[in-house]
Length: 260
Image 1 (cartoon, rainbow, N blue to C red):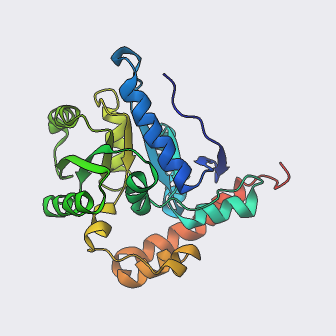
Image 2: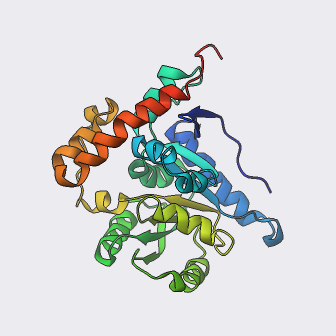
Image 3: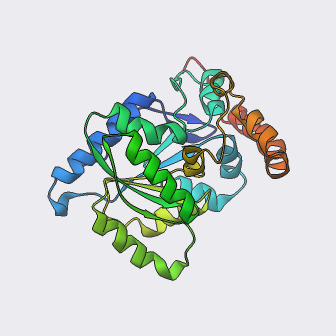
């Protein structure tokens, strides 16, 4: 059994999926179905889905360790609108639309026609529990088979992996923030018996309403970071002040002719 194939474009040197939200959801759902139908000896390691945005691009080119981790991903999607914009500015192949993780968690049950089993890991206990309850009520094709908060020690990971495997989840969501969540996935890839793992940052807090989403027009204009900055300037000012210009530079530096 092979991993799914999909078109990519190297945005700022990071191979990024050049597919829309529906195609991404269907690809992941189909992989889950194929994985479940395959003989256990033929099932590959989990298909790792990581995200790219301005912060990720900047970190990729300033932290060799993070770059190594990202390179281990099976699929990197355009979580930030800036990634979509960079593909249009500097490349012949364009990413059709942003696939934000906060939308993807709803896209899988809404845009893939068959039910899937999901395990939510990360955030605080009350947040992940509330997110699981909301998702289970909202989506008929989404069965939550387990939750685990994101606060644990390295020596607990083997027990956590066993819990996830026992749930027979199709999709494991890991929301602990970059680069902790990606490192967890790489470290435990061989132990986890799930078809798909998706890193999702603070996704659960958006589901519960603890973090507000920007208006749709700001999301589409690539200005969601402005909304987030206004909402939490103390936490995000220096992050955006440093990483936004650096990500633009990296996208320009690794640009390719629009004719190629």
